[in-house]
Image (tube, rainbow, N blue to C red; front, side, top):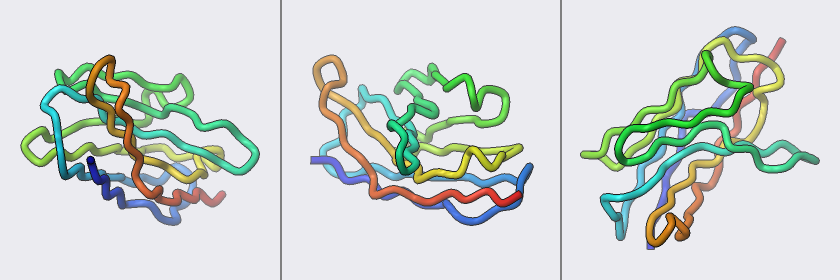
Length: 118
């Protein structure tokens, strides 16, 4: 089992910045993918960004150029630097950790609320 502790959400004004962090603990494999998804009421869960253990990254088109995902493998922690925030970025953000065959073993954080006020 893997436990995820995500934090860093809050209320910020438009064009402001926030940084989210998520620490994984438990039965950690060195080969894994960590990332962030977001989910607003009435919407489908959306991949925001992900980062492979090798460092390769993937971003949703809506956040490219504004958000940066990074990780510290020594701490099993992933970060999401969010800049130039927009009201439409308001969501609950969930940390995701995947490992195992085809990275099929998935774990989720409890979610952290990000609210961008205009």
